[in-house]
Image 1 (cartoon, helix red, strand yellow):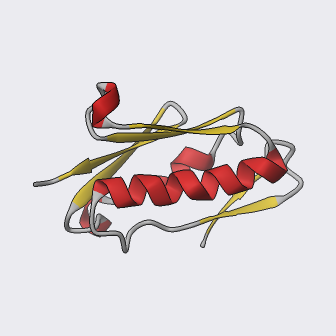
Image 2 (image 1 turned 45 degrees about the horizontal axis):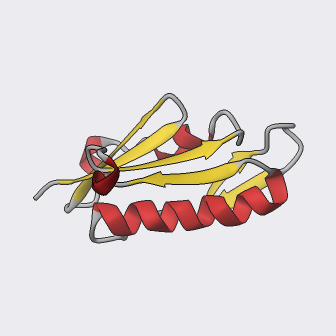
Length: 99
């Protein structure tokens, strides 16, 4: 599990790791579902944008969630799953297939 602090700094929030997924889409949808569940308790809204929405890769955002949540998904390039990469920037995480 990946742990981040809530916006008020009082609670730990557990999010699913995605490094065992085999595609960028699976990873993004797993993270979206994890954020969606956490947002029911901690507020905010989980958003998922896909290539069909004009995005490059799959983009997951937790609007009005904890500031640091996306940084928990910064993955060292050597640690990326072989099939996709992750990039966190400005409170969002982008998953991109390598193939």
